[in-house]
View 1 (cartoon, rainbow, N blue to C red):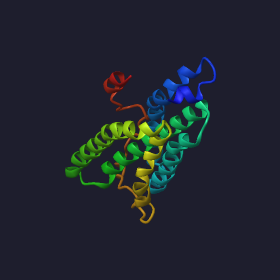
View 2: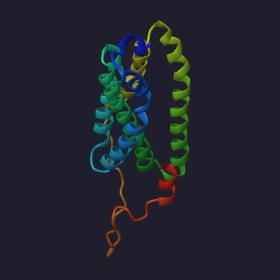
View 3: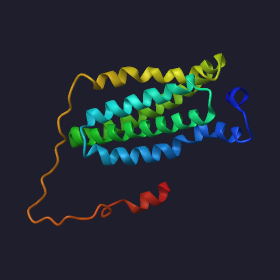
View 4: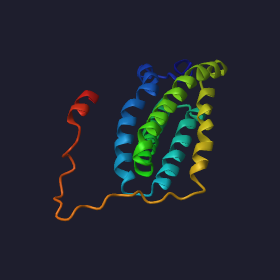
Length: 183
């Protein structure tokens, strides 16, 4: 339906496919950047900022008439979604006792998967009213953003560096095998 309404040139078919395909690369960049920012800035404000970006850019295609603009909004939305997930998982690691971390991280991951899988048939059903309508489903995430507004988060507890500890470079200790599998 998007192609029928917005295709104006031969590259339109590629752009229509990119509406969904851009999410993967954007999420890879968003999670990386959020991981770096989560240790440097107040996570509450990061959640609010990335949550606002997510909501605005996720709903934007409903109002747009340009495939290029829709692809850009989907890229920003994917970037923000991955940033939110990375910050949420980081917070579980920093704020919860070690005995609860794995279960909460598993619960967050399962919740993400359930919402993702459940939203696909719902979006398909809503899509019967036209290709624009499913983009409004992203507004269902608004209450989650509102939960971050009223309360501040404590600074994460970081272990103090040991006396005489040698500073290591950023790449030491990275799980290189897992990174190879991911690529």
